[in-house]
Image (cartoon, rainbow, N blue to C red):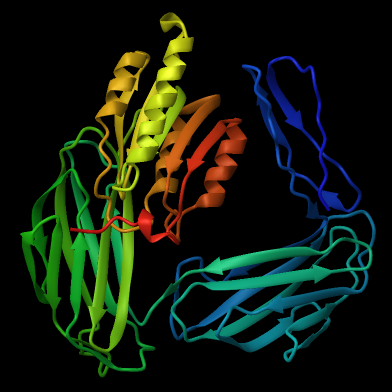
Length: 437
């Protein structure tokens, strides 16, 4: 059920929102009121009959390996929970290996359900669930617990999967300072569950971040072409798992120099393919060191890829109207942050004319294919925006599939930041795509 309530005539300031209802838990929230603006918190209830699902490893699961989930049901209420039933909806294209109630109870493998013992206040029950997975896409597991006395509780768990042929990027240091050297490692691997034991025609394509200079590149098992920078193409040795002596893993080392002082985030992308296996892509995002003390009143976070010129023009129009209404001496401290596949700061100022000039200079171009680094840009903007501040956000693209959307929303709520979004499209619309050269 949904509901709505409104409180009027409150003075400016921060207010803590607390909700209570028998059988439910509600996280407290903070509302920041000011400048005649409303605060609209969304309160999501949870059951006091709590369910938690933990995979045996938070790292990506290897394709072809079993995945184990430990499911814990806890009675956080004040009365005994009876008729407790756990039901699990397995990830698509997986099969059940086993399901077991660890502290008593009965489980049915056909329906993937467990009838658990009555739970007194504070008591827990644990179920061990093992599944077999032979597909490469992320696993989405849904676990539901019901009881006579309490509302249902549901937990959905996402587990990334590393396919049979994969590439994994890593970086050091992270964060990195401007002018420093950054080391990337690309690990190409044919895992030992692969149904075809040899991968031939192995090619690794890396797209280095903008704003860096390539200093060195090496691998013991292949030849890399750097004539088309920032794209690097490596033809690698065939991979095999036929014997312990066979080469099933290849590492490519890359050293780059960060020489663009305006960048806030680097995105390095690598894709591997072979004749016998589909392509796999990984991205490594490296933060640029920013002094922790820097906090702004307002952050403009703008997508500047090739399809965004109309939206940028809209930002210019809105900024002109804002400048016309405010006394220059009362201008807030503002950051202008732009993003494509990377994130960069274009201005940090109280001078609104300087800010307007910086926005006017923005040119919508490039950016690679949809999606873009929108969530990554927000993860940089939020920590450097004051509590009760404001973020103005504009994009026409979806975030990356592995973007930490929930983390961003939690950070925004935690600091009481007003989030004004101008979202004019997503990656389902081909007109929002930006073609690579």
